[in-house]
Structures are given as C-alpha cells and as structure tokens.
Length: 128
Image: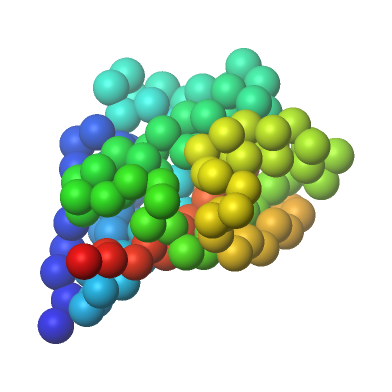
C-alpha cells in the first residue's frame, strides 16, 4: 500500500504527480527544481544557489516524512551543463557524510522543466 506525502515547504506539484510516495520502508521523492516554495520564484543566481535550493526542497520533503538526509540511499541528478559538475558536487556533498553518502547518477540533459539548470530526485529508506 502506498502513502502520499506532500508539504507546503517544498514546491507544489505542477502535474499529475506528488512530492513523495511511501511504499513500505521506501520513500520516493519526485525531482525537485530550484523553486522557492515560500516565494514561488525560481532561484537562478548561480548553479551553487540553484543546487542549494534543490537540496533544501528535498530536505523539506524528507522532513515531511520524518526523515533527514542520512536516510537517502540514492539520488538522480539531471544537469543542463556538465561543466557545472564541480560546483554542483561541492554543494551536494555538504548535505551528506562522505562515508554514508547515497548512490548517485548524474547526467547531462538537453532541457529541464522551466528551463532550470538542475533537477534532483531521491530515494530514502525509513529505518526503524
């Protein structure tokens, strides 16, 4: 049985999806873009600020599920420009402990929703 969990602390879905679905002990978090839920505005100052906003959105969804970044077991990162890899990685790494960091895929794509530069989805495990 699946449970839908959404929060107003992260951007509202703009299509036929939810922010997260709990299935058993797993939490599947939809891709987050650098949209600030409190203002409704895109964060676009720099790839670092965009990445930070995306990670904060994921953090808000994790929190709504009673979790934190330690529960994340896998992330998928979609970027518009692979040249931003180092800058993205520096911000992304600050949300995880190196020895328990999740698995990750990072791929360059042609286009993302609202023409943002980064989108990240995550899977977390509800440990007891």
